[in-house]
Image: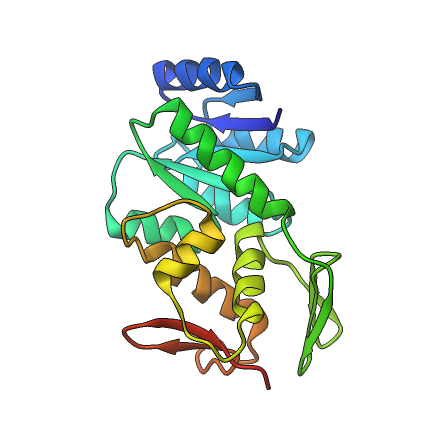
Length: 224
């Protein structure tokens, strides 16, 4: 059973998802506004947040940004549109995944479980790449002696890239291995997460040396 914070302003959608997720065995706290959701997130520390994008007041994008300033709890966005800009903005704001409404409860439950598996996954060893240190056992990353705070998805992405140093990993490979479910070529998840990851682990995200783009193919991790 997972402790879920559901933030959705539509009463019928909120009630339906709350009931369905409860039947799936989760403990659900439901809120109607971003402001209320932030209060619950800070006070109750849920295992995962299911977050509508279009909220009155603080919308889903701003909610993500505020949470990410201090916390790496997993976030799945609920969006009524598959518009590229909405999806990219949400991922860049710090969301780990997204689903398009209307969504089947079983599908949402599968996404929740996949994101939570990513949050606790890892293998035990320690690797050093210049001033970047990855402790796979403790699931901690540091650069120049300072902790690097990564979301579960960013951490899984970094772990996967560093497991294959020098190899080009396609976006489809990363979608399968990092996101743990099949997308039909939706590379936006990969590209947005790589951009966020570079901002945290590269000395200069505009001129990355560790995580390199191989145009037309994907990404590779280059050890110094």
